[in-house]
Length: 233
Length: 233
Picture 1 (cartoon, rainbow over the protein chains, first blue to last red):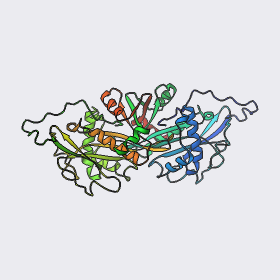
Picture 2: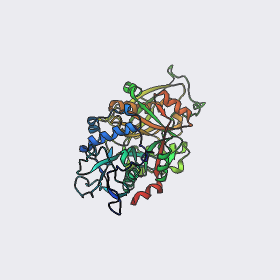
Picture 3: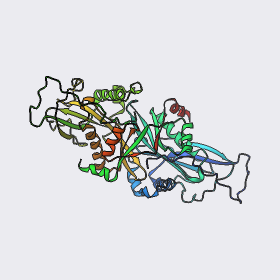
Picture 4: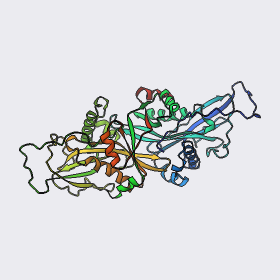
């Protein structure tokens, strides 16, 4: 879907289960969040995240991605040159500085969140990261675009998604900021994405991050049979 | 500019100069049109076309592209893998099948237009093609995008421009069709671009080409100082 899923959806903060000890430290509950480049071994998690995003957007019947089709089309070029995925992981323990997460292309972004309540992740076993003792909480998929007026590349953010139990904690902002920071680092001129015009919460969030909403432009899409008709054009 | 310039602008068909012989053949005036991959030697023409496009869009003060900045950012990867330019050339003589226009990546599209009137091109000397005895009439700049729902690449058309005296002759359609055909050939899932919501002529044209206008989506853009602020994010 040509869609950046809105990072702060209007879902309530999950309540703490009754049997969870509270206030065990003066800092609340620390949660370590890390953004790293995705690897081909992350495809099963990326596939699950894309499926959850399609359900969230009520477009699950439009989602035909499989692990095989993702594996065949992603990771075909060096990071940032084409389709690139940042994975967001969380852990209750600090992240090690290991070769799996850090390489010549990208040094992970790490942030410590001090939560008032621990997060109950009902799917933590399904989203156990290939990188070790962490849980995959979200992702952003982006790729270079180009502005002829600037004569500069930029990044287009195709998808931004944070799993439900991790929302409203600044993780969507963390993912989008990581893309913006990378764009600046590479001397790029823009970061762009799309939003649904009725999603006022997402629009407000994006404007607070410094984005302008381009009201006059409409996306034109040629796909399916209408595209196939150009086979013999 | 993140803009596909509308191919059939509401400009009048140019009138034939008085001293031009008319009806010299029963076929009218044949004009040979060719679409080929642009080369680095075409940068001066691409630069002029981008500048004309910015004037047409009344956004000339937003256009900072130079020949040097275009040369530094285009042609950095094989065609269709990243930013790609198709050049539209016209000639009163048939095009030869030469190595300059045809290569392993793309075999040119050639079409013969039978015009009722010859075209008076006041800038033909400026737009003499590097490929020989032809005139550059327009271009399209596009690059791969990605649909996670389809798990397939597509093409995004950043710019589509036909010089004024060559408009309303099907050349915009020829350029866009060439991109669509290439997308089908590569097994891609979509071709997308943007249009201004008040440009009813362009919208009608695109719909006739099979495109759907996505009414609900808005583009978000982070650029300039707002983007630079992420340097230390």
